[in-house]
Structures are given as C-alpha cells and as structure tokens.
Amino acid sequence: MKLFLLFAVCFQISLCFAEEFDLVLNNGRVMDPATNLDAVRHIGIREGKIAAISDTPLPGKKILEVKGHVVAPGFIDLHAHGQTTGDMQIKACDGVTTVLDLEAGVYPVAAWYRAMEDTAPLNYGATVGHIAARFAAFHPGMEIGHWAVNRAKIAGLGAEPDGANKVARDAELKLMGDAIKRGLDEGALGIGFGINYTPAAAPGEIAAMFRIAAERKVPAYVHTRAFGIAAIEEAINAAKTTGAALHIVHVGSSAIGDMREVLKLIDASKAAGMDISTEVYPYTAASTVLESAMFNPGWQANLKIDYGDLAWAATGERLTQESFERYRNEGGWVIIYMMKDENVEMAIAHPGVMIASDGVPFIDGKGHPRGAGTFARVLGHYSREKKLLPLMEALAKMTILPAQRLEGYVPMMKGKGRIALGADADITVFDPATVIDRATFESPTTASAGIPHVIVNGVPVVLDGKLVKEARPGRAVRINP
Ligand SMILES: [Zn+2]
Image 1 (tube, rainbow, N blue to C red):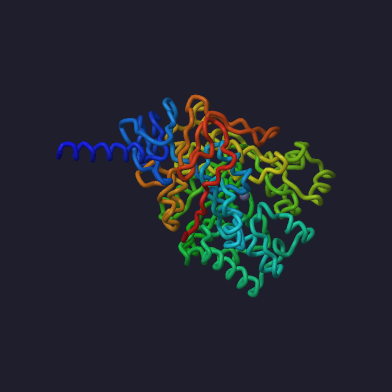
Image 2 (tube, helix red, strand yellow):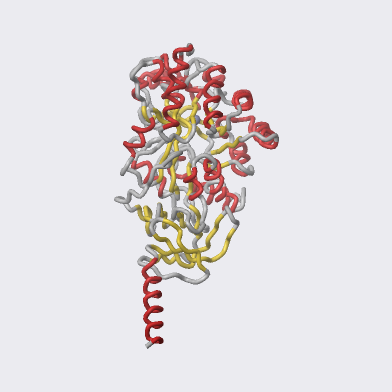
C-alpha cells in the first residue's frame, strides 16, 4: 500500500512536471552575456518567466526545437521612436523585445502610457521629454505627447516656433521644470533631451534640467546641441557640474569625424568616476524631420554637409536648395548622408558602446532602415561577416548593457537582458550562420532574416519565422510600475 502511494505521488509529480512549463526551448545554444554562459541548455518558461535552465531536455505544453540556433536574451532598444503596433512588429522581426524612447521621450507621461496599453507586441517605455515639456511651457495647453510621432502639432505652429527658438525666462523655466518633475512622478525613465531641436535652450536651462535629473537620480539622455566633440564636451561638463548621469545618444551621428576623440573622452570621464554611457546605430546615414530646428539657417556648417547629402525619405530623391525649401515648408522625414563607415565601425566595436536603433516611425513603408534592421545588421554583417566584434560582445551591447543602464533606478530592468532563473521570458532565437538585415534605404521595412522565434513575457511574437499578428504581450517599463 505504502509503495503504491509513493508510486502515485511520483506519478503525480511527474505529471505536474510535464504540465508545468507553458513553453520550452530545447537543445539551443544559450548565450547569456551577463554570465558568459555559452552552452547547450534547455529553457522552461512558466507564467512569463524563465522557470528552468536545464542540462537535459524539458517537457512542456509547447516545445520549440531550436538545435543549432542561439537562444539569447531579447534585444533591448534604448532608442526607438517608432512605437506604433506596426513599428514594433517590424522591430520584433529584428529580435527586439523592449523598445524605449529615451531621447525625444514624451510629455505628458501618464496619458502616453495609458494610450499604449493593449497596443504593444513589445515592452515599451519613455523618458519625459525636454522638447515636449519646453513646448508646453511656451505654448500653454500644448500637449505634444510623443514628439517623434506627433511632430505635426509643432509644424502647425509655423516656421521657427517659440518652443524651439525662444530663450526661456524664469516663468518658462519653472513651468518646464515642473512638467519634467511631473513626468518623473508618473513613471518616466529619466529625462530626454534633443538640444539640437531646441536651439534656444541656453546652457543655463540645460543645467537646470540636468539638476532635476541629479536630484531624482535618473540619467539625462541627450542628443547634443550640435555635431562634433565640442557639443559633447558641453553635455559632459553640464553633467559633471550638476552631478547628473549622462547618456549620449547615437554617437555615430553626434561625434561624426571626431569619433576617436569622443570615445576617448567618454572613457576618460568614466574612469574618473562619472556615470556616462553611449550608443550607436550601424548605418552611415541619419534621419530626422526637415521642418525641425536642426535645419535652421547654419545647418550646413553644423552638420558639415550640403543639400545633396539630404534625401527626401518618401521618394529617395536628393535635395537641392529649391526642393529643400519646398519640402521644409511641407514637413517630413529626410535621410542625411553624413557619417563615414570607419567611424561607425569604431563605435560598434568599442567596449561599452551599446547598440540602439534610433528607429523612426515608418510612414507608408518609408523611412530609415535602422528601424527594421539594426540588430541583425550588427550580428550578421558586423560580427559574422566583418568580424568586427565577437558574437557574445555584440549580444552584450543589445541585452545586458542596456538593462544595466536602467536597472539602478528602474528595478524591473533587473529582470531583462539576461537568461536567468526568474528573469522575464524575453528571448530571441536566431541562426548565427544566417542572421542578417534585409531592410535597405529603398525598402526600409523589409524584415531581418534568420530570427525564427522572438518571445516577449513568455508569448511568441515571432514564431517559426512568422509574425504572430495578434500577439500583444508587451508591458510598460516604468520607474514605479
Ligand atoms: Zn537624435
């Protein structure tokens, strides 16, 4: 009788075990840059979390056989302006599981997070944006929300609007600072700056906003005032004076020809104890909106380029003075050919520099391919084909490093960017021999290849190489969830 009972209990346990994983990834090559694990392991997922990492194959309700494929933490994109369902689906095919807009950000914050609920295949989040807070201060009642998406609201203010082009007095500084504090209270992931887009924001204003970042112990994510080392020095000095942590966005376009000196400066600042980081996207062309203050008179000297280096994103045509003015009045996205391969490669290979796409919203399938191909391009083109950096290092730059950038002040990021027991089951499965970007400037939304499965909070958003169109497992990333 006793024996029978024991047998019955064991049978029950083995049944429970068989039932216990919602999803299993068997026989994959698990690569976890947080621990440097690179070995065949079997992953069991339960209730959206990694529940087992096993030496032997696991049973589960659904089993994916992933032999010969890398099983990596899902990619975290710190710089993703495209946050519509469609933009996220394109990024899912590139292996991304979390998209954060830390540069431009949003304001108001709570309303934006509310509007994102149930729309998101990927995890999402944003900083409170200095640009939008500044426009709210100068244009009472103006709620831009997500700057990169709702730029038409600014275009409606006419040429050179006050929000970008007028120096702030005490009253506006107070409104701006209060708006930013409110955004942080509502869960924003730091303070985002696009100083280039608000040229009237004087150094004193930037310092005042950096001071809020320092008080709240959140980083300032900064697109600097201009391109080249002088503007990066300005941001670093402001961060040093105020004690704010600093993240310089898209160092490829921000540093342009000064890449070697800029990377040296960032490393030296870090060595001196400063909390500073940076990121790069793997393309030599930038992209932004032509009507923005970045193209106020003097842009050629600032960007060190001319009309013919700009292409109208909707058609691909190169611009002339005439078409520049016509399209600037109309408003829309341009591609900016402004970087050299050797400098972009230097940043991709440099230790500690993260990979982030700066993907902008796709409009009618047009835009910059970085929103669709950034991560596969680094893995396939730069790591495998050009041997610029080992695969594990490339993965670190898109998983654990971005998670660590945030986790000191966003506790939920401790559950991301790693393959670990109890971590969120955000997982990307790719074939290291074939993973590659397919998006081009002619066809910017073409999905990356060689990434058969992408799992967000335990739910496949890409399965067997196909997008799961109805999947919406993305959750909000906030300071206080
Ligand atoms: Zn930018």
